[in-house]
Image (cartoon, rainbow, N blue to C red):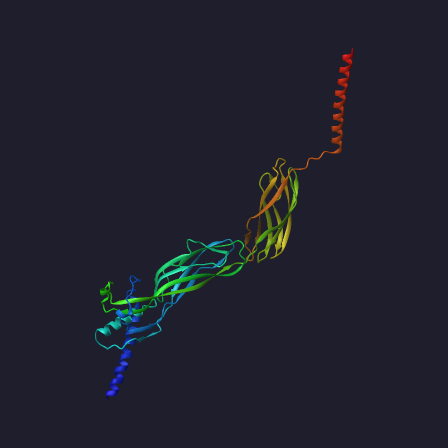
Length: 369
């Protein structure tokens, strides 16, 4: 009989703390949060540890909205954090009687221990490993006070990114380093911490720092993209000349029903500012000609002509390329004298010479007389 009672007592030692832990976990949301680290915790020799609890925060990230962007776009990435940390179990660190002050302290410690899955002082930043995606420095580092298990962050972390005009289509991985703390261990002080010059607390928290990196995928959408690959033709002041322009689709998608347009300013003009390119496949080029008229008094120098292409994208919607600058040299016409002009000049010179000689001769004869 005594052996049977001893077995029952031993069983109670394990069942009672387990039931209490379950009840405490059920009322966890009603418990006050563990305060932030406001003081240096005392060394272990001034504290007592009754339980070893297993589990820690597990932080995950999710993006609100779309992460598919276009070249040249400046957009915001909104990241929500969630804490999926759970308690895996606990065990007694020391033998405690089922009654008395030590027993009450052990239950109080267990109450604090189950909050170890809360993350405190979360710091998040967003980093790009490529120059093709730039993170706004004003938004690349943000903080959150705490994140309890089973909860989402109240507000998202908002990062501003700018996509380069030259970024190839595809998926890019941005890195979001996280830094936070959690209560790795709770030890009871017995309410005597005031002796050590600390606040009169019944427990001390020992924090562990965690560093982790979460990857945020960003997709740059494929599209048609044009560049001016060659320009030929001469522009002469006072004339109408033909300018041949070759456009190349350096993007990933075809451009259907593409139309090239020139935007010219004085002293240049054109009677027809648009020319059809047809459908231009990726990697293909198309050449069109524009007649450019320049004013007779135009200054000889390099002029910039703006150009853009309107086309139909894969969704059947109208789309426009980026503005492309076309640089052309305008020259003054060469002034050439023809044979007739040279003959006339010669006759005039000869006439002047004969007149001078004749006057000199007449002057000499008058002197002799």
